[in-house]
Amino acid sequence: MTERQSGRVDRRQFLARFGAGTLALVAGFDLLTRQWVTEAAAADSTSFASAPSLDGTLVFDAESLAANAHDQGNIVFRTPCAVLRPGSVQDIRKMVGFCADHGIEVAPAGAHHAMFGQPLVSGGLVVEMRSLDTIHSIGTDGADVDAGVLWKDLIEAAYAEGLTPASITSYTRTTVGGTLSMGGIGMMSSYRVGAQVDHARRLQVVTGDGRLKWCSDAQNSDLFEAALAGLGQCGVITRATVDLVPAKQRARTYRIGYPDIPTFFQDIRVLANRGEFDSLGSIPQPGTAQPLVLWATVFHNPGDTPDGSRLLRGLSPAAASAAFEDYSYLDYISLVTNMYDAFAANLDWDAKVKPWSDLFLPDGAVEEYVESVFPSLTAEDLGPTGFGLVFPMLRASHDRPLLRLPDGTSGPWVWLVSVLTDAARSGPDPDFASRMTDRNYRFYQDAAAVGGVRYPHGACAFTEADWRAHYGPMWETFTSWKKRFDPKGVLTPGPGIF
Image (cartoon, rainbow, N blue to C red):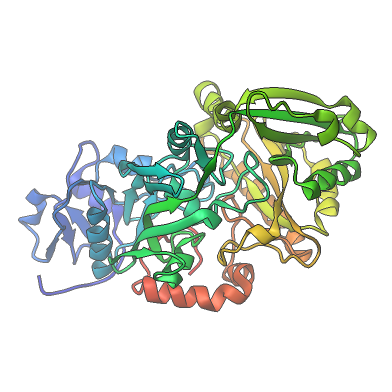
């Protein structure tokens, strides 16, 4: 082999040559035809680049490719031409380096829980991160875990030691590496502690040129910041140390229904500013007599029963009708996960189109924004299993530069406002997806006009100008990090940033 060329794999030519019905182990890459090839086919190749020796497997059978051609949103479909199931971190290092050398795009995929093609790649290599799922250690100094570990598994393992992650996503069947690449937010844990990226202490990262590096605030700090909430643009997170805190054993959730939006915001601001609850938020129900229901949760241990009259003091008359429900800590943390697991088991939820909208609103604009959006939502805007989310996050607790948030000039809180739309029927529905993603872009434009920012997990098509505006003063820095850590530009094309 004396020649290196760049280009894209022709999937149809590839499948015609090697078939789509059997498990095929990849031997290497044909530099002229731009195809992955088996050992048998390599014998006929005059420009064959051998794949590195691996501890895991590199495959291109039809079933593996199809499983990695879509994410949970079922809106964007991109078929790779090979799938790596790494047996070690070295497999990822070797294959990312191989792909960089030969102009092959590569994307890590965890639980595929993104909604708009973020972990997908057309004609390139997908790295299935779930095959690296070891919890190396758990202690008061944090949890050291592989990036493919599910948060659910880490939460349960930590709880057995009396600990819990400091920040937890609402849906816990996501991977550690996936949420650290996105940001990691959720209503079920404390609204005052920041996102999951704010509680990463150390990362192991494979950069776009195939280098394996450890990084932290004190070591390779630029790479550390580029990887956290970096949407996979500058490196593949392969291992992480994340903060753990002492876990309480019980959770009590008070629910208060509000007939109007201003009173809801009046009360939730009182509770947020006091800081006596551990979780605050609402799951709006448009079109009902009480469109916003406040969920206020306090964690506690047996024998330390919460005093509702004290916790809810000074609120509007709506609080007089507050009801509460008690859970074990793990049952509470798993509420959203169990709900979606039930949808998947009984309603074919995994196959539904999910054009979710996730936006951050500044403190001074959120009430008016919610009043403009939620009352206008139709049955199609939510679907039979969709819902909204509104919850505060303490702006001062978030400090990772690539997790873009509104500035704090209008108040101490940033508010997540989500419309989590699910289709009525299973299966692809391009017309519905197009209508809803256009709607999401209108939601985004209205939010941006008042200082809002997109959380880039949902389904919203961004132009280059939109991405530049999204990153604002960080754009030039992010661009320089991309060129430095992924010089061939092969990593994670799905978001379409660069």
